[in-house]
Amino acid sequence: MDASQDSVSDGSRSLAGRVAVVTGVSRRAGIGFAVARELLAAGASVLIHSWTPHDAEQAWGADPAGVSGILAALGGEGPRLAHVEADFADADAPARVVGRAVEAFGAVDLLVANHARSSYQSLTEVTAEELDLCWAVNARASLLLAQAFAAAHDDDRGGGRIVLFTSGQHLGPMSQELPYAVSKGAIHQMTLSLSDALIDRGITVNTVNPGPVDTGWADPELTRRVGRALPAGRWGRPEDAARLVRWLVSGDGGWITGQVIDSEGGFRRWAM
Image (cartoon, rainbow, N blue to C red; front, side):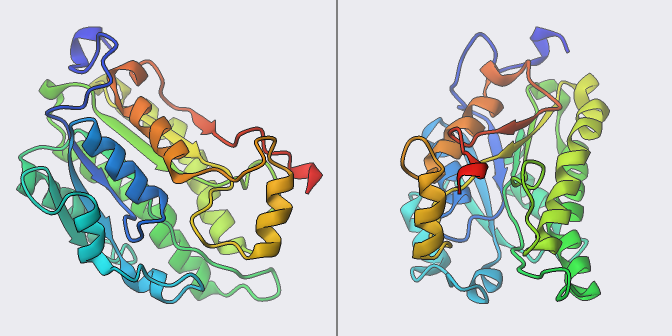
């Protein structure tokens, strides 16, 4: 990849003029929201994706402010912010989401596939239906988003960036949430191959494992137990992951590709 291909090089962290797609922006407490806010602050135009029915069926529930509240907290829809809702269980949804960004802003430069389907099923509980659904939403959609991004990206703009999200399944067992762990493991393993497929076009592909992040999903007992294993004495915050993503998609991150980055604040799993 020639440095001339990267239009946000020269050490700049500014994303002015860049167009980003951020998936999984359904809750103000979530990582996706923090990423969208960070990229907007850096000057990018951002298409956010959400699918609130997933949150509504989880213990933490949907954001009480709804999609309108999320958009308002990001400054409101306008010249640099647009929204689309889509269920990634639908195989056509990834292409529609990327297409909406091109429709809204005329191009797409950055993809942050932050969305995830959570699933708590142990080996005795796991079903084929849930395995298929987690695979479709978590792994298949991430790959199809990368495919749609690659098809839509104008290489003359330079500096294409894809950031995927995995979990800590490669560092410790997650036996109570097998469909989730297995599908996230697939994202981990696709990272290097996707990066090789796209690097000749100047597009980087990296994956972030943000570690334990306080987005309101953990109960008080788990919060205390995990907190004791984090040297900082606190869980990760969505902003911690968002700052890493912002760096990866900036010109400064252009030399990094094919990596799974563990951003866990020194999490000592063995101490839990």
